[in-house]
Length: 442
Image (tube, rainbow, N blue to C red; front, side, top):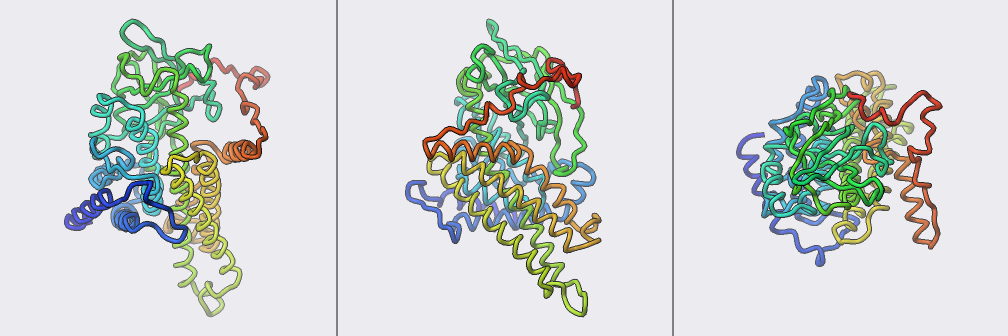
């Protein structure tokens, strides 16, 4: 992308920021985006197609972090979509986040993962829960694309069962001491700061959990191996190991004992971002399949004329549109300050399965060409699979939707504290739960 185009895009993006009306005066149309969001969509689409799509295969094959592109995304405001302008962010809304992540995912799935985690689980959380000093320290250089952040709540022995985490935070006279292992940390190898969720008072269970901001160069903090993943390989994933990590008392993000709330707030937002990522991957799959079907000749005509092919394409298009509408509703509810957890789970569950469905059908339509790396279909499929897993797998989303829907009927559908690790008879299988967090690289 040339300099003039980039400068023009930056100006356009800034215009979007200044012209978006207050939430109270805006409503979501089910047929189209507001004009300002359409401008943002075009900016992101142009960047994705010109800057990301041409290098996506190389990033995937060589497991490369797109540092140059991340800096440009910072220049466009996309590294601080939800961050106040006072701290260098774009000051936009969740609908804008959805629009941006969908378009970026069409260019490169791994890059959209980097952005979603950074925006929702790092910058967005500090913007919402941080004090002025924390915002001034941990936002400006992160929203301009110079640095990226990461987030840790999962552990080797607890994922969706986050309340049973073992990472501890011990308060001493003038500092905190952190010990434990956080797993599946996106951006871990490149991040300069870390939002870490740890147990400060085990007797209080989830009410004893506290969130902290930890610089990645703090003594005692180390990284496990970089995971060799199936997809989203432009983003790094690793364990973060904390061994007597000392941080100042003012490192607490939010209030002591509200770390679980901080973490879930970020995860709910991330589910909208990841749903948007799934839609983007699905849309890219449909685009690829449609183009191929229009050109591939079989039985004397383009295969697009075959009814079986048309049916596949119709199902892909319909599921993408349905997923997009679900996601936009979740985004609108969040922007209006209304409960949106159920809708975010619906969107993430539906869009993630749509991504896998669309990528699978894209490969089927391409036949042998869909199975080789000369075409992007196989990469779309590999990138799509993670969307059904992180920020809570499909099973967890379904349990949340069922539980929250039952509440609307005045009923209880408890998920039995879902698979508490303490109820899992680990010893029957030769495992020790106590030992799990000390295993590096898992």
